[in-house]
Image (cartoon, rainbow, N blue to C red; front, top):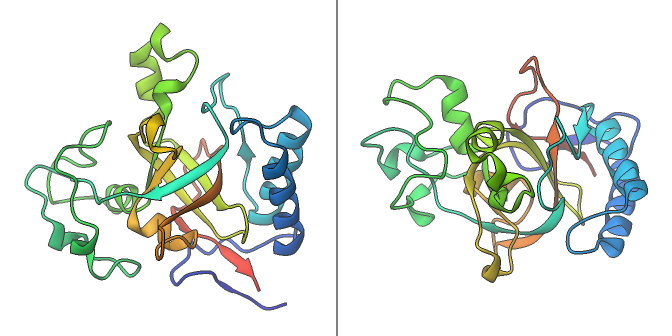
Length: 229
């Protein structure tokens, strides 16, 4: 099978020994066994090892004793976030979102504040907003014990987001907190994230797995990943 970018620009990380077909089979099986977005230790190990092999990443469900309240759930589309004071929606155009005004600009800041101090942004600051997700970090069991430490741990934490049915994937950062539990969604994704996981049209929501990318050296670029057709 030929490898090609799933949805336009990608960050160049090629698939390894795990094929897309075998990975998706494991994801869908895990999804069928998940209990309130949580997997058994055995299923979690199978899935993280499969994703690590597939994308040549160190994919983990837990880092430093911390984990999200769930590793699977529904993701829904989010608006763009203000990157710096005075940011405007017209400045958010990207290869994956050529018409940012359709998604709009959130009226308030994300839970972790601005991504940059001014319009003179670094490439990393641009990409962090472009590829951000919202996660229910406030439901982490230890959040209330030390919210300041939890805030710093989750702020812009690098994550792997994978479509549970197709294997389409993106490396993103946690850039906001949410969605609210009553929405029925567990995660939110920027327009670019939704593009790369295949949920940018129609209902603009669907099943995903979300895990940490262990990248202490900050070597893993943000953006869409390859899939094998």
